[in-house]
Image (cartoon, rainbow, N blue to C red):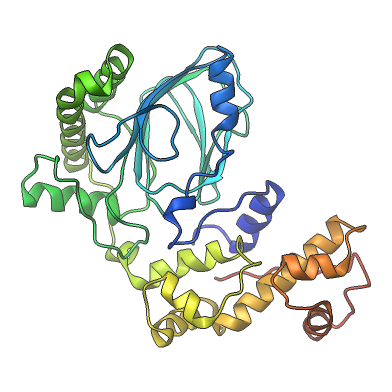
Length: 352
């Protein structure tokens, strides 16, 4: 990973973000993640127009274009206070900054996108938009569910994509075998996004299903041509089981209160217990259970320091320990002091 687990975990804990685990696509968009954006749109502070399905805000697509999660845009004429907190999506999100600037955080790395740039976010990438405020900007996007949740999943393009097998494979490789998020949009790609915005602003899903299908196909062809002209660095390592385990271990810190077993962790990654434990040892030099226990103890130590009036029992349970006594014994074995000695400094836990 390009940033240590510890730094990413602490930043996300501070913001109370809870990203999903791989087997929970239904919880991928937190109920309150877009609530502030929707409220701002209802007050007329920002223009928000989208065609969507599931929990995404906008006009329902219903049965049209299965696999299309959302396509739309926002137009913010002045600074906004509804920045989208860290989250994951069920589809591949491709967005274009048509005006202004947008701050994007992907896997702990911050980018300030300027007019004419686009970004691509895979379903397993933890990301936030805004810092946490959103400046004057116009952002156009589409998000398509390829049936993938993990880096090593097989991509499946929706049936309404009018592509040859060779072109679909080539675009899949460009999207799946690199972790680059930010690109300068080509002229054709920019035009594709602008045409998408104009259609969504001026029509409805009922009236424009065929046009929407053709526009998204044309946009993706433009992106493929752009990738061919300036290929991003690619590696098979980005689509391996080891990469899946690496992402999961980074995600695990946000779900410490779950009653994890080795079987559960392996199943999240689509692996056997033996293969999961093998990759965990390669990445962390620890067993999965030992790594999980260290994450829980590290988070508990952080809570003890930040919330001095919170009971140790409550902290223990929130971090996944079955009892305060077990927590106290594990804490003392790990750090050499009792958790009742609040404020004791504890070193970092990294997966690198």
